[in-house]
Amino acid sequence: MKQIKFLGVLVFFASILFIGCKNSSEPQVTSSEKTEMTAAEKETAKTEISNTNTQIVSNLNALDVEAAMQGYSKDVTSVGVAGANSDYQTLENGLKEAFSVLNSFSLKKVSEDFLFISDTFVLCTWIGTVEVERKTGERFKNDVHTASLLYSKIDNEWKIVYEHASETPAKH
Image (cartoon, rainbow, N blue to C red; front, top):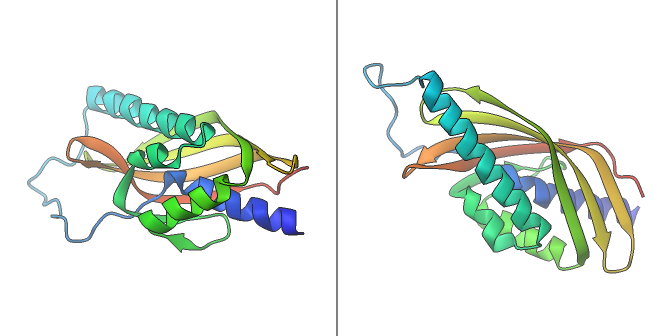
């Protein structure tokens, strides 16, 4: 039971690798401002967001939490697999703690889908698998790890402002 709880906590924090909530003090788009992307802008956004996802995954797989967090807005809100909300600092601290007991962490992408909400918001549904080995030698695998990632264009960069993650129960 402890192993399942540990994996749940680990996956929660790993899930936060895709989380956030837009700061409500930022200006709202009015009807006279551009709100839709052209087909070319959508393709560019897909490429940029996919590259950010790839970099986050690569950094997590290297157990480099600080580098992985660069894809997140400092105002991010993350909802993990256990249903708890985390802000940026809580997410980063939780990942560091969870990764401190690991020999390896392997997150692999299965698919990505994109929903274009406006020219500054894109929802990415990221699906992958997770394999973990603790320093004790215990191994766990989740065949389905899903993250709904809301990206916002902040200072000309796509950043995760909201994440909600879920997954299937771990296998030993």
